[in-house]
Image 1 (cartoon, helix red, strand yellow):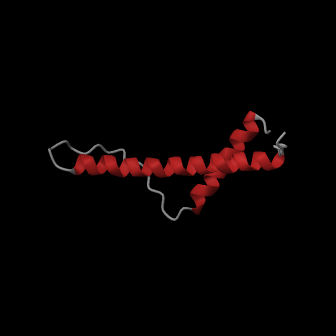
Image 2: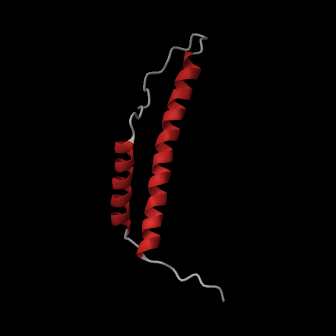
Image 3: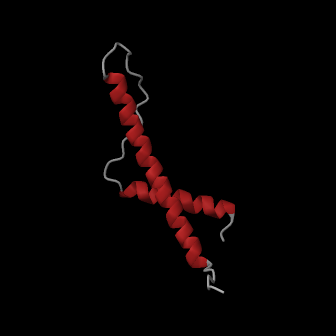
Length: 81
């Protein structure tokens, strides 16, 4: 199993590689909409929620790839008995 600093570095590189493959990756919108009773705040929240979900999916993918790489590096003998 890889050490913690090595693992963090590999995860970082995996996330960057996955981000680089994205055609368009929206950033979170830091501007708070005016709360004037319109639907703008709801759209703003929904857009930021979708952006955050996309980033979380990229990180989960990177963690899964990292775990698979670790499994290949040190295969366990899972024989029954």
